[in-house]
Each structure stands twice: as structure tokens, then as C-alpha cells.
Image (cartoon, rainbow, N blue to C red; front, side, top):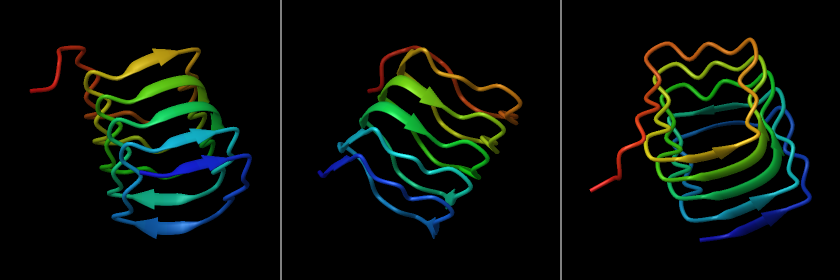
Length: 105
């Protein structure tokens, strides 16, 4: 578990990264490729992932507050049981994304 605050991680290129259980606040990941990554159970506030590729990543059980996923590839992303407040998915591809709200077992 990590705390990541007030950072600019623009245009990073990573895959299979593990952020699970972390607190991420006031960060900008715009233009990044963050494929097959684990964001399960994160607490994410005031973050921007615009124009990013998050293909097959998981935000299951995450708390997302004021997060922007504008113009992102969210294909096959798992948002199951996540709490979303003021989240922007405008112009994003969320084909086959999982938004079920049932509790995780």
C-alpha cells in the first residue's frame, strides 16, 4: 500500500502495475498507457487519467471521487463494486467494462 499525492505521471508507459489499496490524490496520469494494472480498493481523489489506455485494468472496490477518465480506452476494465462520485467518462471506450454494483466476495 502506498500514498501517492500531488504528482504528474503524464505519459507513463507501464503494464501489470500494482496500485491496490493505495491512496492516490491530486495526480495527473494523462496520456499514459497503464495496461492490465491493479487499482483494486484504491482511494482515488481529484485525479486525471484523460487520454489514457487502461485496457483490462481493475478498479474493483475502489473509491473514485472527482476522477476524470475523459477520452480513455477502458475496454474490459473492471469497476465492479466501486464507489463513483463526480467521475467523468466522456468520450471513453468502455466496451465490455464491468460496472456491476454487487459486493465483491
